[in-house]
Image (cartoon, rainbow, N blue to C red; front, side, top):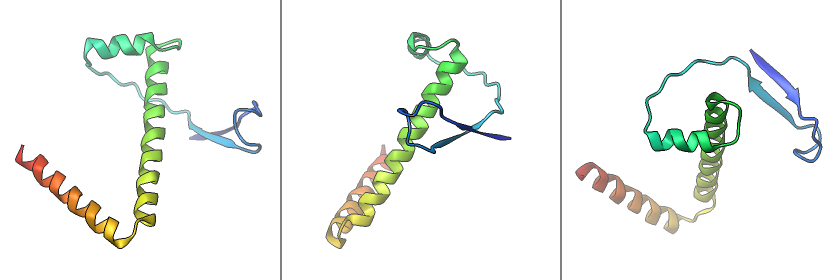
Length: 99
């Protein structure tokens, strides 16, 4: 079930901005390196769950932005740039399979 909540802080987001949140939570158990647990524990927040959710949401936001930037770059590049990029991508992909 999706809950739509308006943000009350007018300085945080543009007027009329609406944030959708999924209120259904799933319990996750994970085994991770101690250094990552220490990093998580050092973050502000009340619980590891809250901290991990923050980190994952931040990562998801950054990944979405990166995907958009890549799509925009492809849209605005000319044919010569596209051909050069595709050649390098093929070279990198082939070298990764050889390792």
